[in-house]
Length: 364
Ligand code: SF4
Image (cartoon, rainbow, N blue to C red; front, side, top):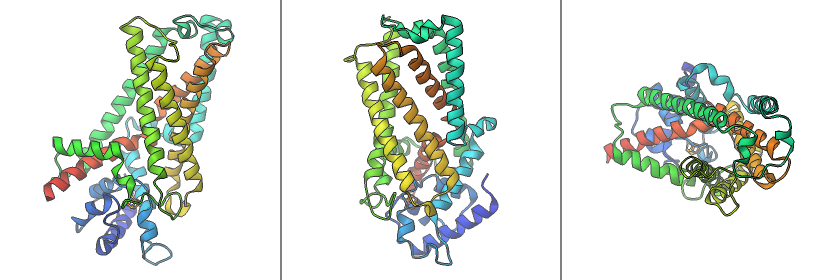
């Protein structure tokens, strides 16, 4: 739960914004605050999750530091978002997994060592150092049942964690003013899929520097749609394997490989670009804990995508066994951290966008 001081300071800053209204065309935050005279803690959490940290409002603000009003909306709302993630995560005990790059690397390295030891014990060391190219080659390194059981269990944990977080957030922030009607759900989906508000007032974000650019929006698209393509590739592989009895690996022209490769390249370009932008970004507008979570999430995606591309490129060689274990270790670390790290912004942002769409419909 955000501290009372943070709520009070955020309410103070939003009240100044409401009086000024210079930024009203920038994003969904300002239309959402215009209809309010006071800001309850539940409103503040909802509003904070509409913000996507573009910083347009900071550089446009006449009351930004060093002015005595010290209006710094991006940094303040990032603090509220961090507290929101902490309050609504489930189970609470797994929260430390979201701590940054170090837990991610420790998890990946631990899974890699355990995986290598398990394969050596179950299949023999030769499984890790010899070439396997026949259909079902991956299963001669790691048994299919073991792989499937592990990732089904992690997938269920992920769905349960996000489901609980979304329900808890909606219940605690949705006011009488908002009902999740179908049009609101669809409009929010459209805004999320097109990243409408990352367009700023039309010129893009003032991120990483104080000049407008659409680069961040395009990089975000590459990561998001790259991830969806990889998800489609994995789902198609499951259909091939279980319904058509065609186990991996698949030829280069197979839709499974084409979708996975395009998605992986999209993630590598998008995540690398976003990491470079973060390294160059203005720290005075940031909240460092949230910045660490951003970096850890992008690093997790980058590890999964690069190890997957490496595995694809070298799957016909003696390195295949070790690379398969490496790739699955990075996927495992991603699955374990995703429900608690920055990836969860998808849940809260979308839920807040549904409430925003519902409020806008009520007002019109
Ligand atoms: S940082 Fe960008 S998204 Fe956040 S409130 Fe300011 S203008 Fe809106």
